[in-house]
Length: 274
Image 1 (cartoon, helix red, strand yellow):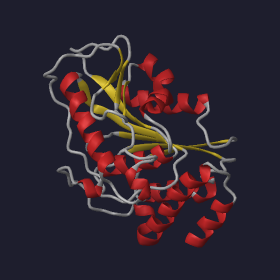
Image 2 (cartoon, rainbow, N blue to C red):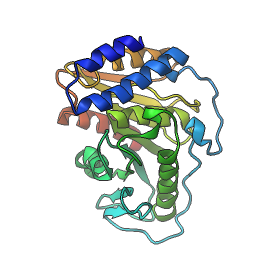
Image 3 (cartoon, helix red, strand yellow):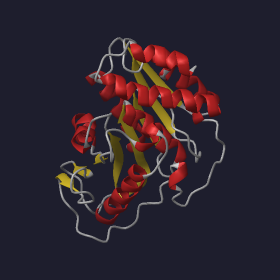
């Protein structure tokens, strides 16, 4: 299986090849060690276990000043900070839905905001967009660590300043960010009710908690993370695990078409409006 992944990587053009190798080889190793890592049944455990991808932050009554509409740096890192995007109309006294939005390899927090802002603003979705410590997310290259801790700190800060509905928190991402969103969402089902993964590569290993609903999309012409080796393998395994998975394929390359982003956010908002 690993040999097959390396053969496919030879056909992937630079600069995408490095991202593909990190994701696909990681996926192959995870598959060899545990059926894409989604078969770990250590459900219901919590307590901020970073090695298992578990977050400890939880919504609470805000105790600090509401930041108001706009995109705000959280001040957690001088170079690769996390951003909170607050749409117009959000009010401190009314709990709003929150989406943690994760950029792809080589991206930053602004890429996470741009991924969903166009569809999220009209739906009143708060966006928390962290930046990975390195060129991509830690679990894609091996295991949860600094990126998970920064996301936990960012969530704690958001919960201190903005009223967030605990029943309407989701995690989303594109490419490597989609892989990380799957791992993070499955490890923290008690926090995230829904997961949106645009063109993921694999599911990082980690504990399982709860049963979040999942939306996955992938382009049939994707040459960076070929669909036959990624989403077409991921989706059946997740469904075999009993998860509610909505899956969309589209004719296109490694990107998020506007109509797919719109469908993903409509799917999220159908939960958020309830």
